[in-house]
Length: 362
Ligand code: TXA
Ligand code: MG
Image: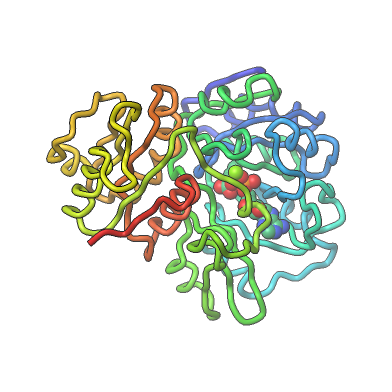
């Protein structure tokens, strides 16, 4: 694997020179891991079926799970769609408002899109990322880039380059490191239906933001909150975002969260066996400073309490991976109310990482 680091994100011409070798690799059928504003992606030329199939092999990804195609400009959008396709007014508005950014739109797939990108699907997911390195790479490659998150399937998505290397070092051609991803959870996946818009995966662009932009109601697919519901998006049926440690989430009233965590650590109810449990904690700073349970610093994440949900989104995947590395058996998470904003995305990922061990406490 070739690796390069980019620290100055302002000079786009220089960026394009810096990523030229990785872009050439993409054109030649290579696999390139690159930063986006959500998580790191693992890219291949979306028009090259052989290259796209290498993504599935590298990630050990189920072959029926479709990929998102990343574009850098309007011409590349057209190249993804059927010849002469006219965008609907809502499609146009969503693109104008949220691109570049963390919104994936499901659109009719054009003939150039490699079959492996959209196994069994009529539609193809398309997004224009809002990250200068991603944009420079895709523009320089000159082709749309199919890219899932750059992790082994089922593991937490990578939000730093070292997490990509840990999972995929021997399976890919290039890794471009541009520091931590700003948002930390994946893009919103949106399906426009005749009478509504349906969020198949909540993400950086929230229900409220979409509802303000288009006229029709914006609903969530049933499986966003209910683990037992049949998923509309093929990818959502697989085990996801999960570290090796068990994840436990409590949300609601702060004192109740504290006592539920304490009870768990003391082995009450279905709590931990103190002799074998190696706990880790993710919570707001002020909660941690009041929580009397002693944990070593490597197993404790005290996140700034201001805008905690945003900080949790940003840090979550990296913390899950770090706590695995230090041998934690159980990760206790101070959760957030999933009803609004970025909290919906964070709690959706936590619910999957925790296999349902999410409790509301009062
Ligand atoms: O933020 C992101 O979206 C990141 C970065 C790299 O852009 N990518 C990402 O890709 O999260 P991935 O492959 O890990 O997740 C793609 C999700 C899956 O749940 C998949 O099932 C859904 O999008 N998806 C893709 N194409 C689809 C389609 N044609 N129909 C329904 N769902 C689709
Ligand atoms: Mg993924």
